[in-house]
Length: 115
Image (cartoon, rainbow, N blue to C red; front, side, top):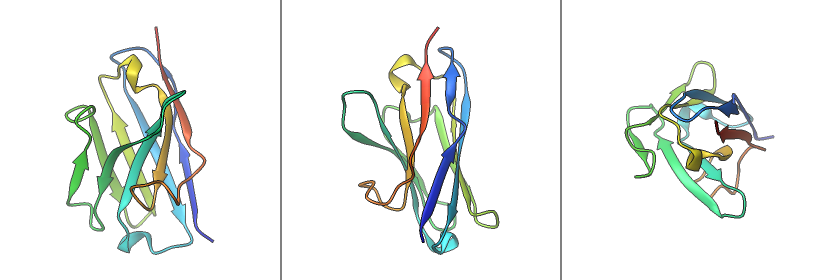
């Protein structure tokens, strides 16, 4: 059974940092791309970042490029999204997913950026 469990969200001030984690099980994590998506209140699901099987290739949405860093630890079946210089518009539920459309994703972790 595929499971993706996000954690690490919370309330942070503008300009602050957070690192999200995604613990995976039930599929070959070391042979999988991992995607991070987010959904702000009242808005659709937005692709944020992705990382390749080996972790060498990464890509980011323009809105987070230079501020977010994605990584994965295949030995621990865990992916990470380090977020810095956070802005209020980064506030959203964040999901990790096996696909870019978010069809197989976790239940999410909430990030709120506010003073």
